[in-house]
Image (cartoon, rainbow, N blue to C red; front, side, top):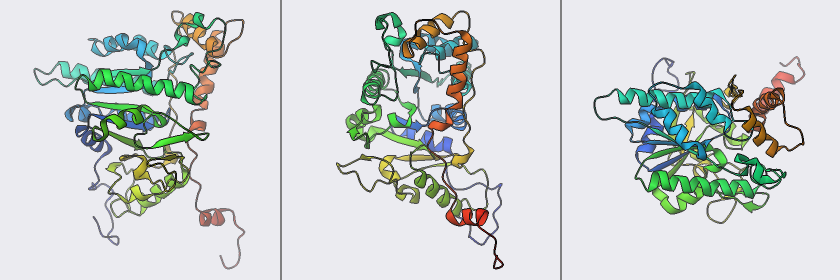
Length: 383
């Protein structure tokens, strides 16, 4: 490490592993690695799209995620095996999820990157290392709104993320079942990219005083050392912990004086692992006190400060004349009314959802008190 008094060349490399090489390394040592994220962070999806080659080198054969529907797995397999990229087929996969669609461009670019990786692998004369994307999105009555008999899918607890145990528990068991079938029983190695709440392993989180289930919980209790959890910086809902990590990163001799720092590391042996996460409600041993980052996750990926996050962008032509009727029927099952929604109304729903992405993220760390005093305090002669 450079001496604290020595000027640092920002162009020089550090001994810290890159996020891509770190993620590949931890995947290479475990059968399933859960990668926890917040929904719709542009930088994180760009990182994932650029990591396929190193993941394949580490033996990863599957990227599993919850952002396309399990019932569309044959169409997803066909898309990634095609000789030419089919943009329309890719977009339709996202219409087939969550009512009006989960149509963000950066998620589609992950699939495009997987197809490009596989296309390059097919050109190799030997030692091909394709990666299959496995969908974990949960099919439900929304896929056939007529089964609701005029009732709301959200009212029945089938498709609403915020209803508590119903949907979350159902999706956890569904994801664990798919991973068991597609990864464990096939002897494959997988990176599982999901919403951060779905990736907890040894940590049992509490919501409204009730313990929750996650796909990570279920598989970790079966696999133990075969399963690990990695999280992106800023995704844990503890603003103080996020700020403390950024302070430690800025003060590190490895980082001081450099811009655009990116790295991945194990939390067990790092000072970052000792950062308290007092706002996290959960337990790893029956008691709910004293949680630190190393209790919450095994690995940590730092791509930059939390304030640099940008929300994903909408796919421009997601809804078409061919898919509108089915998308509208599924959305009306979530938000029922007698008359159908118009195309403009569903586009407005999509725009509103995109605008609200950042509101669902953990809040930004607040500036230190002394910084606020300097910025807003009254100027005196002593100043």
